[in-house]
Length: 438
Image 1 (cartoon, rainbow, N blue to C red):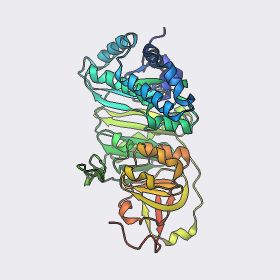
Image 2: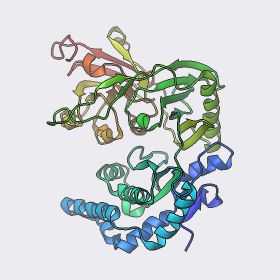
Image 3: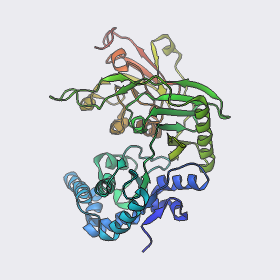
Image 4: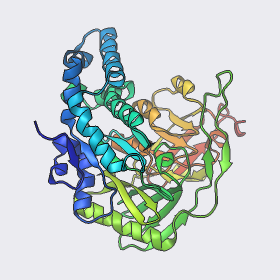
């Protein structure tokens, strides 16, 4: 049997059929001399070995093959529960633990486990935010739990819905894993190698970049020309505490607080990162979206995936007479629709087909609503969040980091969303009212 543990520096790490496009892309950047963390890949064969050891092949086939929806749900639940709760097969666990101990120097260095499914980070199906990543793992028990959780995530309801919209069967694919040392990031974020206008866009926040990916902050934004000149920089200020359902007894909705106003990157650092982004695009031969982190030693590239682009839209001039708010564009499309203001995920059932969703925080959990909305506006999030990536795939106009959107845009108003320029406009009506929402 081929080895299950593949160092990220090994030639075999370039084989996306074994380690998934996420890991294979990162390995290619490392071989080209770009800065990446070390680490290793767990071959997708390990996942298939686990299915065989647990006798789950038939259950896997039963999820999308079943005519009975209830039976399909039971099969998917069995897959998740068995993969999450049963121990890792001995022939997988032994080399896996040995590689973990070597990488973390017996727990002296925290580790990271990230999904690298064979179907993710491809053009047209990025699966951004649909699977799992675990940061700061400090012991073997937590590490093995993270491995099982990443395997089980292939069968989560959210991932299955995404696969169904892309005509993919989870039984036909597998979950490889990317295991790396944690980058002790001073700041982190994402970047687009090419906007609709042809520039380079960088988002940044203090600490780890997961807050940007999950749409939990309005990040710093840096815009550079193709030749590396810094054109614009804006410092994000609003951040939120952990969110809860505002309608559940005993829980508290997230409340905004101001973060430090000092920018995450100096101008020279933004230019340096822009060069790395441009080099990544050249190596992959296409526009790319990356994730990055900066520690005391400098920048590290964490991920690179294909970037969806669309031409700048033709705008309707009549909207120029109406109020506007600026935000961070997702990079595609222009559309109009009725504003549906949602302050909690439990209210999403109110969103009708063709509505423009106006919300506080645009995390990847909202991906299931994208097929029915005309656009999305959120107070937090940035151009490189996971939900923005999913919106670009579907051509859904989205503007994120729009201050006060849920209070300023009236429920029921007609809204125009410019996902390229990052501009939101709305048209007052008697039904919508003339005041802001309280």
